[in-house]
Image (cartoon, rainbow, N blue to C red):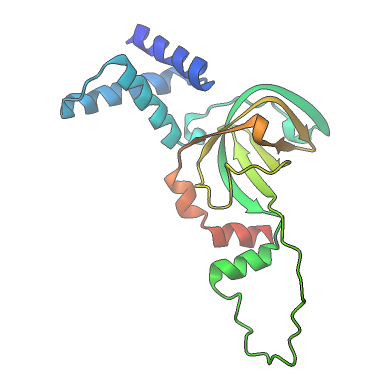
Length: 210
């Protein structure tokens, strides 16, 4: 298993830019092979390594105790990071739109005051369309960091599943503990974490942001 584990570890790093810990990887491979044996599934190296990647996507990085961000990053006024940083999304809020309005929409109360007469309610002829600006709480498994949608990108939104894994890569500015994300420094792997989804419904996240 040592040679196989080493090969898969190198593949994860070279293909996905993810550095996995040896103990987690070996336990994961062992579990995959047991499952394949029970279901008579082909256990060639390609299948195993793809399943390892799938298991990583569905894992909670906090439980893996992984770490890739530099220590003390949140206390830096401004710093430029260079490298590859696989991170997990813990929460997402659109700060480009009123959190109160978003909460009303989630709760289904945005039209609760429709009892006001047309004479007493003046509707503006035009209202500016709110611009999306996502604000994230991320973790590498050990260190937490905030991040902001510095330039609009379409790959993430408030409907993105919590626990989704992303890769922040290349040259990335971190200003006052906030990573500035854009299309050309952020890649979405996918994945999810059940406990994050269950414990952080949209209503709860928006209430915290108020």
